[in-house]
Every structure is written in C-alpha cells, then in structure tokens.
Image 1 (cartoon, rainbow, N blue to C red):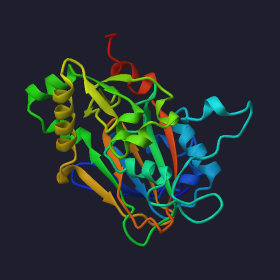
Image 2: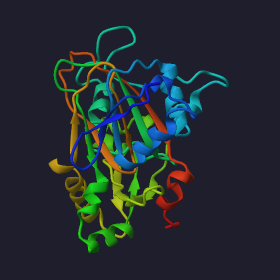
Image 3: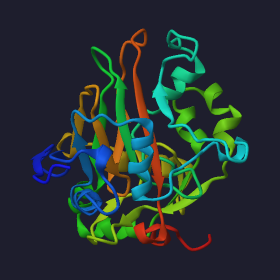
Image 4: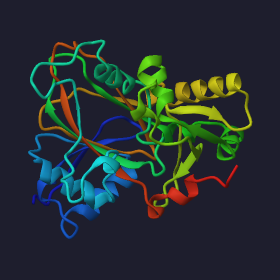
Length: 296
C-alpha cells in the first residue's frame, strides 16, 4: 500500500479526493484508521482509478460496520449476499424502459435523500463503485447537511434539535409515481421516527437529518410538515453546499450519511449505467441511540 496520501478538496465546505490509498488493500490493521479519520472529518471521500472486485468492495464496507441487506428475509440459510447494483441494465441484456417500474425507482433516487431512513436501522455510509458510466448525465450529487446546519441561526438550530420526523419508504416513491409507491417492496417496514439532527460522536459536529422519505413532522399538521420538510431540504441543497460528481469507471465515492444528502441525476435511459452500492448500518458507536427519540 502506498504510504503518501494526498488530498484535494471537492468543495470549500466538505469532501476530499484522496490519492495514495489502494482501497483493495485496506485492512483493519493497515490503512483503515486513516481512512476512517478522513471519513469523520471530511464527510465525503472520492478515490479515482480503483480496481475493486465485489469481494474487495464487501471487505471494505465491512470495516465500517454491518453491511445492510434489505432482502435478508427472503434469503435461504447460507445463501451468498450479492453486491446490490444501481443499474438500468436487465439481466437478459438491454436496458429498462423509461416508464418501467425499475426505472421509476431509479428516478426516485434522484430526489435528495439519506439512505435507509425508512429502515429500523438506517445507514452510516454508502460506498459506490462505478462499473458502467454514461456519456452524459448520470451524476451523483452530494450536499453537506453539516455545513447547512452550521449556517443556521442558533434559534433554528435549537428548534431542529427538538424536532422529530417520520420516515417511510413509499413516501419518496409516491413523489415519482403513486402506482410505484403501492408496490409491496415499499411497505416492508413500518414508519420510522428519527430526530432531525444527528451528531457525530467523534467530532461533535451536527448534521440535519432529513430526506425525501420524510412523511411528517411531529407536532405539525400535514401541510405544515410538508412545508417544513421542503424548506429544510431547500436550505441543505443550496449550491454552496453541493458537490456534483461526473463518474469515471473505477471511481469510488463514499460519504457519511450523518452529514450528507445525496441524489442521482438523469441520463439518456437508452444508455446503460451501473454503480455497485453497499450501505453500512449505523451502530450505537456511530450515534444511533442519540438519533432515536423517546416513544411518542
């Protein structure tokens, strides 16, 4: 493993491009401590020209914590867990049509969100690996909720610390297609309640915890809650907080879900696009308990 690490800022307020680390060779004893330090401090890390196999990808993700498996309930004992793909490529070849439910689900990922806020245990990080990229479009954009929180006046920060929001998977899908939102896969988990601010236990910095999956704000009417959520997302995704990434094959992008929103951007759907995606679940050491509000 190379020992000289170089950093280049992605934006003035968060994120760095890291060179000098071969992610395929990272282990608990070699390289991970520095990788984790960069993750905690900078929120988003970009690595170019990597050659990660699926096995490498899984080993890397497992260093951060438990790998999320949304299909665990349907797997046979001992069945291998594949690396999920964010892709419009069909198994039999070709690509899905623009109005196919699979493509509509991909379009829902183009809403600003934090991964897995609709799960009983949400995500700490997502590690994305570029396998097939498009000639145009298909970017992944990140927005720093940590910088956005810092820029709020103290009274708004205090209000957010006292705010609890409710999240459900079908909420984001209904924003794209009411029919898509009716599919059983978007109703596997009940509504989840999370505080609107999450602190990083390592640095003490706070980020806004909001997503397109948010369906309600406790203590507000439906209309008031919708306006509150929209305003919060609008604040967090102002241009000064956003990094827009144009993919190259071999890129690896990972970010701290406690501090970053993300979304995809459209591309010509006749062009294949495949990203390999592994989410890692939050643990108590990452701040899960503090994110969990008392019972309603």
